[in-house]
Length: 463
Image (tube, rainbow, N blue to C red):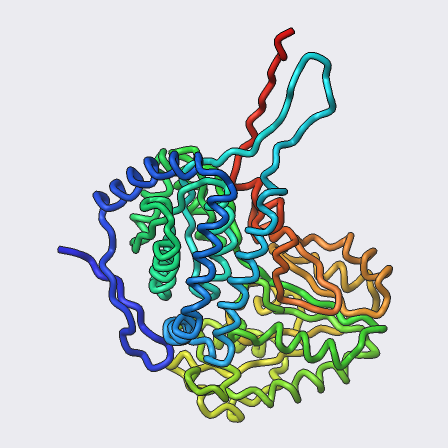
C-alpha cells in the first residue's frame, strides 16, 4: 500500500496537498537515472549549462504569483511577503550564474619550464539537497543552482510542509530543456531520506534543518562516504551600541525578530543594548510590535501570519512562560492580538526583558516570534554575551563607528557579521556557520568549492 504524506495548511488547518511517498525501488530508479544523466551533463560546455539554467530561472519567475500564493498556503507566510521569496530566488540564482565562469575557471600555478600545470574544478556527481519549509526556495536554490551549474546531477527532497516547491523546480527545469535525470525530486519519509543519503551513488548532501537533523545526516552519510554541507540552527544576537542610530536599529531589529513569524535560522533572537540606549530602544520595539497585524496570511493587510503548526506555537508559548516564571517580564499583552489563541498556530509576538543566560529563551533556538533584550555596560560585555552560545550563524552590530564595529566583528564567533542591518543573505558573500550552526558553505564563489572537487593536471611538454 502506498504511503501518503499530507500537508496541513496552518492557514485554516485543512489538508492542502497529498503526495505519495517514494519507496526503495523509486529511489533506486532515481539514482540510476541521475548517474547516467550526470555524465552527459558534465560534458556540456559551461556556457551551454548556464544558458539552459538561465531559461529555467526565467520560467520560474514567470510563475512567481502562483508560487507565492502556494508558499502562503503551505507554510503560512503573509501573502504580502511571499513574493519576496521569488525575488530572492531570482537574485541568488542569477548571481551564481553570472560568476560561474570565474568561479569554475582553472587555477594556473606559476610557470615551470617544460610543464603545463593546472587545477580544474570538476563536479562531484550526484548531490542530494534536503530543504526545509521555512524558506523552501531560498534555502534550496543556494545548493541546487550552483550544483547544476558545476555539472552535477541533483536530487531534491523538499519538506513535507512544502512539497509543491520541489515540483515547481522540476517544472522550470523541464521547460528550459534540462536533460531528463539531471534534476529530480523525491517525496520521502525520514527513513527513506536516510537511505537516500547513505547510498554510495550520492556524492554530497546539502542539508538545512535542525541540529538533530544534522547529526542524522552525518550518521547516514558515513556509510557511503558522501560529503555534507549543513546549515543548522541559530540563536542570532544583535548589539545596539551607544553610538547607534536608534530609529534604524529599532526598525531593523524588530523586523529581524518577527519577519516570517520569527521562523528563520538567521532571525534576531537576542538583543544586547548599551545602557544609555536601553529604555528608548525597548519602548521603540514595543511600540512597533504593537503595530503588527496577526491574521490570516491570505489577507494582504496581514503582517504576521501563523507559525507552521500548532505544536510549534505551543513550544514558543512554553519557552516564554518558562522565562516569565524565572523572572523575565513579557512586555506584549497577547490580548492586543485577538487572533492569537492556544490550540492554534496563530501566536502573538513577544518582547522580553529582565532576561539572562540561565533562561532557555536566551540559549535555545526559538523558532517563533519572541525576542529577549538585555542591558549591557560595555562592548566587552556585549561580545562576551553574544559569543556565549552553542550557535554561530550571524550577528548584527548597530553603530556609527565602522572601525570599532569591525574590531568587534573580528571577535565574534559567527559565520556572518552585519553592521546596521540583519537577516539578509548577500549572494556575493559566503553563507556559513560555526559551532552548532553548521559546516560547509553556500553562495559566493566559495560555494562552488563545496560542490566540486579539485583535479590536478600535470603535463610534461614534449621537447
